[in-house]
Amino acid sequence: MSRVAVELEQDVVNFVRFLPPQPRQALWRALKNLQLEQGDIRALEGDLEGFYRFEAASSHPTRITFAADFSLFTFHFSPLTLSCHPGTVPKEVTNMPSLPDFRLETYLARWEFAARFHMTASDAESMSLSDLLRLAEPADREAFEHLWLGYVPTFGGEAFRNTVASAYASVSPDNVLAFAGGGEAIYVALHALLGPGDHAIVVTPTYQSLETVTLSLCAATGIALDGDNGWKLDLDEVRDQVRPNTKLIAVNFPNNPTGRLLSAAEFDELIKICREHGLWLLSDEVYRLIERSPSLRLPAAVDHYERGLSISVVSKVYGLPGLRIGWIAAQHHDLLERMERIKHYLSICNSGPGEALAVIALKAREQILDRNLALINANLKCVGEFFTDFPDLFEWETPDAGTVGYPRYKGADGIETFARRLVEEANVLLLPASIFWSELTPLPEDRFRIGYGRSYVPAGLEAMRGWLARR
Image 1 (cartoon, rainbow, N blue to C red):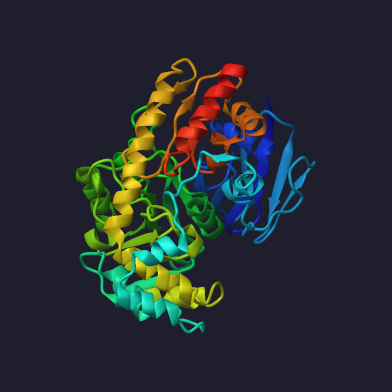
Image 2: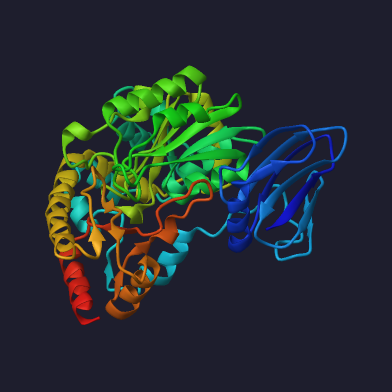
């Protein structure tokens, strides 16, 4: 084993470093055997793969040495750059790395519209414009047909915010901010809440931007759901990871990709932790409202906690991603005003037709959700039967809610090869575990995401069955 020396050459250094996969993995292993040689090290965060935050205080250069299984490197830090030699790692990295590729979207850009069966889709079955308009109240239908195609308010139109607010127990229209989908909402919320010197906790696996945008702004700690224990969240670990500078906890329940839900007691305990420390709870709730049983449904974070922020969309459970409409509901209007100013640099405002159609969908909530839940339940029966027929290849647990699950693949070829061959040879698209890889926590490498919200799921399963029989 050779050694890696890191020299911090100023009194106080806060530095975040990004490395490509091979050096990153070696460094992750190396952190397991960290040895301090000299210097007053206040904190070293080695709880994430790829980004490391060093905080040191010393009147002399500080050296951190630890064992690693690659050649000797010495890293010299200045306030903004990192130089290293010799170089199989980057020669210079800024302390605010650019966002990495969005793995899921990059993968879907290649295959989503090329594969015949998009069997990893996370939205429910969509509908045509005419089908949606048939659900409209007469006044809303007329308003849509005579819609003025100008700008709408950045906060969202009055009719839209009124309709969204009516779905919550404690939200007024002034506590709703419209966004062009959930991705923009996540990006803006994190930028409004986090900055250098802050710390956040992110529950994994999750939608990638909840993690990567957080890491581009501040230090973060990941806490992984336990795949060997029903994807349970260790709330004791959550409590233990809170620091004096922790600002928020980011969660995604019902979870993507596992379909896992917290119990009511677990959710209450999570909020208790947040309340004790004055933390924001950023809650991605885009799969809420299509639980397997109404008894499993959790309250919206904004209704249950004064610092809860609820993110939702019409893309997933309503099956209307083409509208590109989402929102954040929060009890703090001043925070929403800060978000509004960030949104001025992004979408500025939503599409007027999108908001008008979202109003129609939200008012027809019961009809749309009943239709989608009936299809999901029928598809889940087919999915369960499929996995039961291949016990040597798959391990399946029925999700609590949402439109996706995360089964284990037990084949000797591994999930990455299996998923690649399946889409190339059978035109069936799944998302392998590498798409949900985390910088923050180790996660299972033998899983894949399967969706069951679309009408063609039975046909897609038959295509998978036929390919498995042939190979």
